Image (tube, one colour):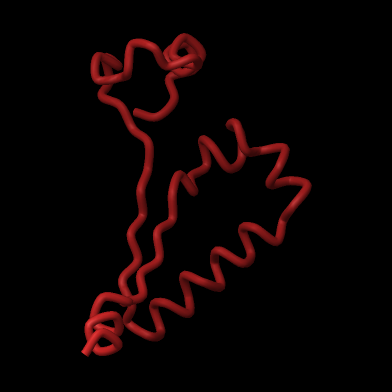
Length: 88
């Protein structure tokens, strides 16, 4: 009975977090991703595989409204984000 319950709970899903131009190409991860191009390649392969299998994919992206009044007040990079008009 336990093994059946565990199989029901063990579903596949792909969670892709902050895989956007503002972070991956010009933001905080740009240097790392330039040095490790397989990260983007492998992520795209995972996305293709999940789509072919009709498994769920969830894309999560950091974003704020135009006034940035929904940004956490103690975010260390807040001023840089506002100055460079990122994540809106």
